[in-house]
Image (cartoon, rainbow, N blue to C red; front, top):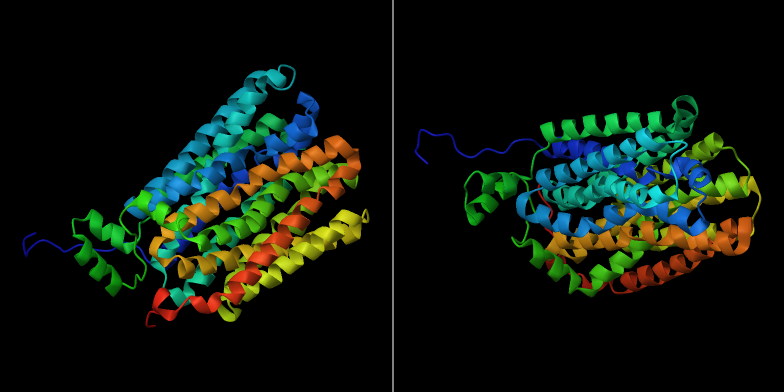
Length: 443
């Protein structure tokens, strides 16, 4: 480079990165409830059993969880913009395919023959959910350690508000513009949101400098001057392998399976619970699900980062899983609507705060492979959103309507397991020495 040429520059700022990543995640994460709020419509038209209904509403979580691992690790190598954009693009294709099926077959021509295709396009529509771990990785690189927990919680908390909003809107849209019109509007929202993200997204400082031709050492030095503390290890596959070789990665994954996987599963399942067990109409069931759980849990999660930064992630996870255990026990034994509502709010609070605390712990427990660990924890942990709904559906198939309540025993057991793990991390937290944690940046 000649002296007359301008040197490499860094575009964007931590605030810009946080804003556009949160927006993109908001757009993609709406895929969680592709089927949940209108599940009864598909159940009636296709004649689905509880297990098949559970599989259908969980379809977006299949790709949304499993793709987190490779895409998060990929973001370690190329930055967040490209993987994030591809995930949103795949969601657009999935939603377009689903819309095409409805335009050509719904209502009279839609039968069980179409179930595999509906499942496939639902799963493809959920690809944007996987953007979670890509965003987590990138934000970890933009922010210093003392603010990282709060910023990660804001990203995750605000980004996960979209399913709650769609859970409210979808039943009303279904009544006014029918099923096909509802998904046509969703397709337009997803397409516009993807275009906005691609236009304004920026990579972390280190990746930007590497893309401009700087070698690793020089790019790292310049990025450190710009405030970046954590850096990718340079090998996406190695990042995952490093994370998978550490027992703490798996402990965090198991806890996240309960907290965030639980949130995903119940976001899709609760509308059916309120409608079939408590007798609420579809619109009311959607509003109740959103206000009591799907919207409230992300708000609790947004504050969970600050709570974790103040009191420590280990203590915060213990308190959170105590709430999960108590609330799921209440949901198992009560048929009272008001008590169930209160228990659901408490359950959402516990899951939301726990999810934030787990990701506050991640860069400290696995600093040598943040990208790989983010994908591992988010992918396999979030897989709970796909695994559990069919199990809940099995309770309904075996026990009838009462199975909607007794099925919460699944989360009672999982909550107790997560509580044991959180306690073990607290007891061993002194093993994480200052040398293992990222240094604090100056103001």
